[in-house]
Amino acid sequence: MGTKRHKPEDVVAKLRQADVLIAQGQSVADVIRALGVTEVTYYRWRKEFGGLKADQVRRMKDLEIENQRLRKAIADLTLDKLILQEAARGNFRAPRAGVHVSSTSFRR
Image (spheres, rainbow, N blue to C red):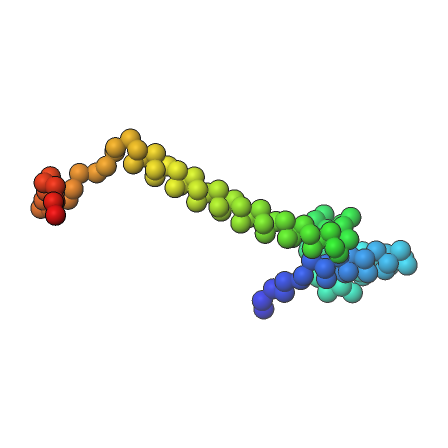
């Protein structure tokens, strides 16, 4: 059976529901069963989303996506910089065997 991915807003709603049920006197085990998640999932959600509101979670996820995009851009630019530095030093590889490179210039 595949795992279900919950949207961050849904997680926050379920955690608020869990808070209400616990305040009504239900045990954590009963609350977890009512939410339909495992104990590990519940405590992971509590750790990650515990004090956040739905709009804060949405903003956090947007920032994480932007951060990931920016990290990729930095990695690409760093690679480009290293390639250009290598080319500027003149460290080119010798031509392959059997390939003749002419040193004559072409005139029109």
